[in-house]
Length: 121
Picture 1 (tube, rainbow, N blue to C red):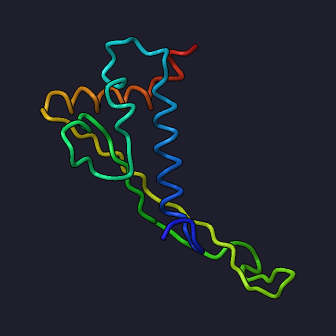
Picture 2 (picture 1 turned 90 degrees about the vertical axis):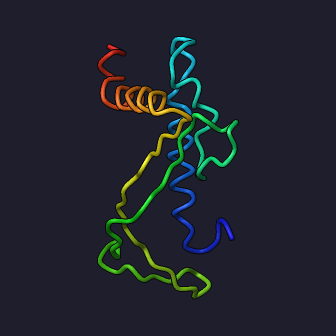
């Protein structure tokens, strides 16, 4: 079941996948290692050799708490709902057929997160 009541893990992971794909843009040099993984960023572990190199995204909660003074509310039809705030940990797993390729992709991902704004100035 997707998109039902309480569905927020899958949409969170999909948002991260979309953000990663958009962060790897056409401004990168054609030989950049990140270009090779752009289409292979997904929610699932890659099981086909054609999906390598790639990345898969995981999300786990670190904190879920009721939100606001009165977290339980009712809509105009009398249906009860609750507001929650959550925090979590995103894990981006880099996979490749060789350790060297995985290391180079991991280095590029770290550089993208750490230095992208610096180089854009």
